[in-house]
Length: 311
Image (cartoon, rainbow, N blue to C red; front, top):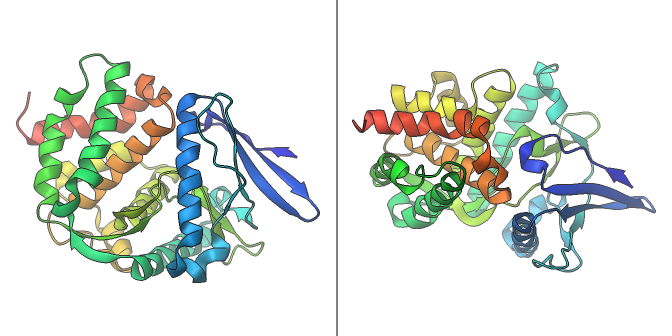
């Protein structure tokens, strides 16, 4: 048995360990909070849906499978048990192995493009605003309101209007969406030449805006290499009106329209919204953390209010 270190706020609500037996193994996630129990139950559902989706057959070896009983909310709390994927974590590639990192980012973007092609179709984002934006805004309003009384729904009004306006002219691919696709959730083979696994599907959706996975990867990699946090990157996008040219070129070369057929800020803004609401679903500690709110949420809210002319 090996206990995996959980060094970040998003991981603090889980005890995670691997169990090896006769050359095989499983990963066990044990919830420490009620919210974590709910999140693990959803992840169990997502893993079962991934396994059952015949369109994903070519990528089945890269995806974990849920084992045993669904970890319904307790008491008693029950763990999520899933198959252990082969490979080594890709995260240590940052920033000491730039060649391996570039190769991994490129392979990841190719994988995401293949998944979009196999499971998705292009649709008007305006038809999915409730599922893709309003649902996530409700999570944000509720949780930041707990940590900062008076900073709930009203503070999000300019952001809500901006999202409604941008999604009204945006076209995205409705299909399987990981929801938290970054280097830390990717495994590589021993030679570091091929992706051997993708894990942490807790924020996944079979009918999500699939392009946000590629955008998440690009923004998270820039942050991991010493760039600004994602919240400040997206605030800069709102200020300038578009992603930096290097990021736009990287997305375009792997089948993602950085302008999404409409407002160039739509994709990074939606990506950020899914990122922060996903973290808040994992644990309410985020909503109580002034530091996290200050770097991840406040810059985007300020810029949305400024661009709307709101004091």
